Image 1 (cartoon, rainbow, N blue to C red):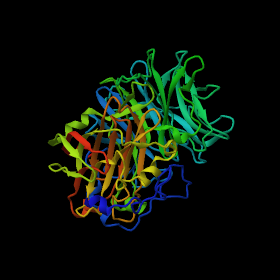
Image 2: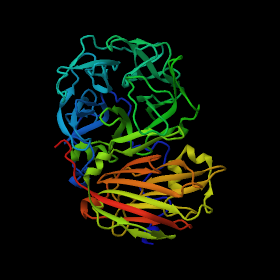
Image 3: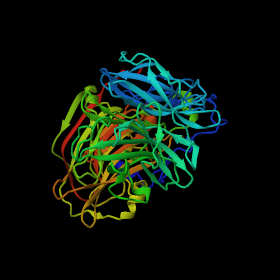
Image 4: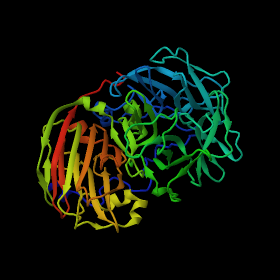
Length: 582
C-alpha cells in the first residue's frame, strides 16, 4: 500500500484546467518580435539523452510540430512535417517542411527539407498543409504560406520527378498563391491548413481551409477542376460560433463497424459517414455526421452547441493531427504532434523539441457514434522479451509488480474484468464538461466503488515519482460511463515540467461485456494509452528524474476500489529502438 499512503488526492506540481497547456507555448501565430532563437542557460538534467524517445518519430535535432502531407506513394510512406532547421524553438519566419520516408511506419530515413520560405507568398513561414493523390496517381501538396504582413495564403507544390518514389525534390507552382483570403469578414491572419482533396457531388475537387471570421469559425469550402484554379463555394463545409480558430481541419469518410479506410478521391459507398476534425482550444475535436451531396455541406448527426462536449481524437498532449488513406493496406492512419511539457530553456539545452505520436489506425465504431484508434500493427515488430500473467485478482489496495521488461521502453496490454457492477457510483453529467478536473478530484489515491484500477508506471523506489493510468466505473440512468485518467501530477520531482491530470469518458455496455482493456506504450518521455479498445486515447509527456538519475523504474497493476477486479490476461514487452532519422 506504499503507493496509496504516499499519494494525495490533489497531487503536487500540477494544474487542472479545461485546456491544460504549458504557459510558455502558444499555438497561435506569434508576432515577429517574439521567440527569437536565442540560447538559454543549459539545464543539466534535461540534457540527458534518456528523455529522447526510442521509437517515436522525431528528427535528430531542432523543433518539429504538425505532421503534414502524409501519403503512401510508390511503396514508400512519406511524413512531411513542420520543422525549424535552425534551432529547437518555434521561430517566426523559420518554419520549413521537413521530410522523412519509411517502408514500415516504424523506421524512418530523413531527407532534405522540401519547402523553405523563399517566395513572397511564404517568406515568413511554410505552414501546415496536406497531400492529395490526383487522378493518374500524381501527388500534389497544398500548404499555407505566410507573407511579410502576416497574410496567410494557400500555395501549391508539384514533385519535380514523379517517378522518384522518395519525392526528394518539389517545385512551387508559378501561379502561387492559388487561394487568397478574399472572403468578407475573414481575418486574413487566421486562414490556414488546407485539407486533403476529395471529389464533390459535381465531380470537381474539394478542399476545406480553416478560417476565423468576425462572428464565427469555419472550414471554408473551395472547388477546382484541375487543382490549379480554385473557387470558393458560397457556403462553408461547416461553421460554428466558437471563439477559437479552427486549425488543421481534416475531413474523411468512415464506415460504421468497419476498420477499413476509405479513399476520398473516389466514390464513397452508401452507408458511409463522415468525420470532421478540427484542432481548437489545445485539443483535436471531431464531429460525426454525413456529407450532404445536395447541399455540399457537412451535417453532424447531433448538434452540440457547447464544444466542451465534442469528442476528442486524444485527451492528452496531442494536437494538429493529420490522417491519410493507406492504399497499401486499405486503412486510414492518423497521427499528431505531441509537444514538450518542459520549458523553452530546457528545449534549447537539449537541442530538440516535439515528437509525433505512434501512427494509429482510425475507424468508426459499430454504433456510428465514435471514432476508435489503435497503434498500427507494424509497431509490434519492436516487441521483445514477452512476459505474461493470467488469472490475477486485485483486491482493494493491491499492487502487482510487473517485472521482466524494460519499464522505460515497453508495450503493455492488460484486461481488467469486473467481478460485480453493483458498486458503481452514480454518474454526474456535468463531469463531461471538464474530465481533467474530475481526474484531479478522483485520483488513484481516492477510494471508489469500482476503481480506480489500472497501471502505475515510471515509478521510483519510494514512489515519490510515478505516473498513473487508471479507470473508474460510474452508473448513469441507462448506461455505464468509464472515466479514464492519465495522471502526471507526481510524474516528476523536477519543478519545470508541466504535470496535469488528463482524462476522458467513454460508454461501455457492462451488462454484456465485463472486461475493460488498456494498452499503454511507454517510450521514455512519451506515454500513449488506449482505453476500451481505443475509445479514449491519452498521450502524455513525462520527465521523471528516475529516468535520468537511476535508470530503473517500477511498474504495477493496481486496484484501489472496493470491488475486486480480476486480470484474466496481462502481457508486456520490451520495445527495441527503432531507426528514426539517424
